Amino acid sequence: MPEADHQQQLRAADITCESGTVTARLVGPVIEQHRGRAIVDSVSKAIAEADEAVRYLVLDFSEITFINSSGIAACIELRNDLHEKGSKSIIFQPTVEVAEIFRKVKLDQLYTIARTSNELLDAIGAKARPEGQ
Image (cartoon, rainbow, N blue to C red):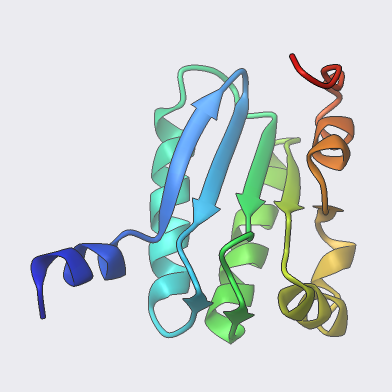
């Protein structure tokens, strides 16, 4: 396997932490097998290393077209861990297919779902910026 392909498989998410918000842009297109555990491990590490208390976790699903039970279990584990600390969990830009899976397994009842940037800003209590700024 070429090194670039191997690195892509190992990288579960691109994670940033800013102003009490950890954002994990999940690497797609599919979350299955051991990817769920890799996501939990990398997000949990970022939360532990955050310089300040994490108030929000944003899981960016914009690249994900399919998620299986290990990915769903990862989402539940992350949400439960943060909920115990009083933090809010948000799923951002799920594809139509993934949103339907979340609805069927009722994950949409555990997470706030933000389909647009403005909905995300509303969910984290930030003010939307005027267009062009």
